[in-house]
Length: 484
Image (cartoon, rainbow, N blue to C red; front, top):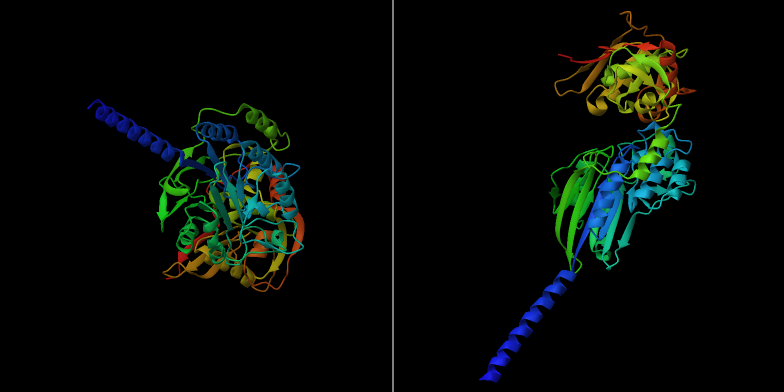
């Protein structure tokens, strides 16, 4: 009887021990991987001290953490854009923060390919894109994807795609894209479906825009996660389409997306995503704070060049100011500025600095002079309107109205000179437009255009210096009305 009792106890101990060992094995086979992502930083470096402190705190809590950018790291802050080596400050900050990879966004080309190649050589992380194909004349080349293998052998595959517009190019100045071709990302994506077999987690790091990311989820269902950019969409509630989780973190380094993946035996078993506010994080990285103070201490950019007598708000007022600056250059009589090139919401009442101007107009476009007839001017305005069925061109030298049908399509354009007179239909008017409009917009014109070798931002700096005090309150020169 004693032996039987002993045997039962021994058996119970064996079963309990086996159960504990099994649980330990199960725990050891479960891995948590955290993917941190931002997008469309647009050179906004002031939040980097909090951003890095937040990333560091997550790295202290989790063993496996990757940090990714979904593109458009450049253009939007003169401290970065006008740095002697354009874009260098944000590359330095990204290196110090420990990025694993960055998608190529359309604004990565704003400084030109040579400058991009230099920044890529300085980066401690790869720039990715599967639908940019350089020829032998281009100084840049991009990996279509990267597979990152963690210490425990888990493989994270990251595929990247860039937005392409109706003209077959990303949204940047076409002259900066010579030697590159851009097949449609949605057509390219299926050719990388086999990556699924080479990785345990399959991520698309895209610069396509949120709506196109949804399409991508339908085309490439083997993806686990899409981390997107380009549309500046803030996705606070995780979106799942075709069993693919899609996230995007707004723009300007205000939010960070944190996606927590759990894998058991290298198989993904759960996904959870959340969006974290970077300004709300209380800690900062002191070294980066000092570095950013040095970057921001720029006497040239901080020079006061004039005064806004009241807030200059919205595309109408800001665009009128910008085009007045262009029209102040002889022999320009009429000028146009596209809304997409107006990059701030307002100039606040008070001092205007050179930095304010470059924040408004960061792209370095030249002024191109065309001699256009009234019919050609109408063609420019109408084609611009019908791109989005909305006013797109602000102007100086005329006041115009687009007449539309019931569906909102532009039908014709009426315009008058500032004194109310009708234009001379036989005259070719000296018309100034940006090199971006000249190369990207479709319109009728016999004149091929001539560069004035003046940057639009510089024309505005000169204009403000000369005017000293500006008041554009209530100025509006472009209108829409029904043709009925």
